[in-house]
Amino acid sequence: MPDAGADARVGIVFVSHSKRLADGLVELARQMAPTVRLEPAGGTDDGRIGTSFDLVSTAIGTADGGAGVVVLCDLGSAILTTETALEFLDDEQRERVRIADAPLVEGGVAASVAAEAGDSLDDVLRAAETAAGGASRAAPGAGGMQPFVEPGGGEPGPGSPRFSRRVVLRNADGLHARPAAELVKLASTFPQRVTVNGTDAKSLLSIMAMGLVRGDEVEIASDAPDAEAAVDAIADLAESGFGEH
Image (cartoon, rainbow, N blue to C red; front, side, top):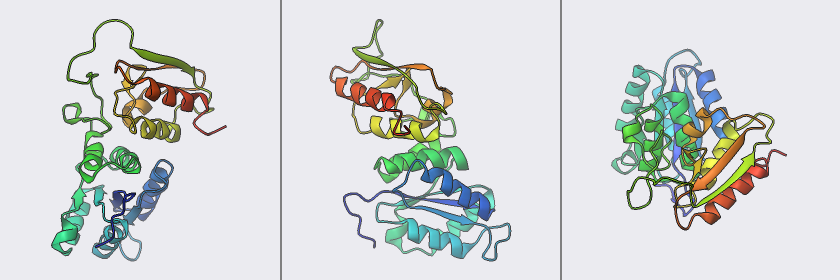
């Protein structure tokens, strides 16, 4: 078994009938999750359209750093190939491999960002699966649209949030995938609930869905009584241009 150190992260495997598609998904996710083990398993052994037991098995083994692996598949037969590969794992490793019921692109990106934030295997799986739009299944940091719920379970009251800052986006391409991922990763390091224009700051897909562009003003806010540091940190990151300037 790999040594799951304190900084071990969940690995992600992309299983596709197309090698180019699997490789492209890893390239995309790498922009937002540079330290996560992201492995493609696309096409057959000789590069044709299809799936390969050996490629999937190898990718799972390479992605497994001890914290577990989440596998995303494009079509039904890719799932069958992956399930066959799992049957050949020893019991201990099989216990820490999950096949996500999630869209390949959105689920893969959400899972990769959650893994980069150091989330557990179950949380990374949930991040992938909530990308399908299952709001009722959403959980903090999972990537789906979520209602604002204050600590303690109460609904927010009327009026202004306790803490808020307004920032004008300066990134040339707006809040695209990479800066959005940076925002979500930072927000996930704080236990408090923080919003960006009313949207959960820990939900990558919700943040990206706002379509914010350069020059847009965003309000970073929280009703939590001890969220000032979180609001300031996220606002400072936005003012810095997310490291793109």
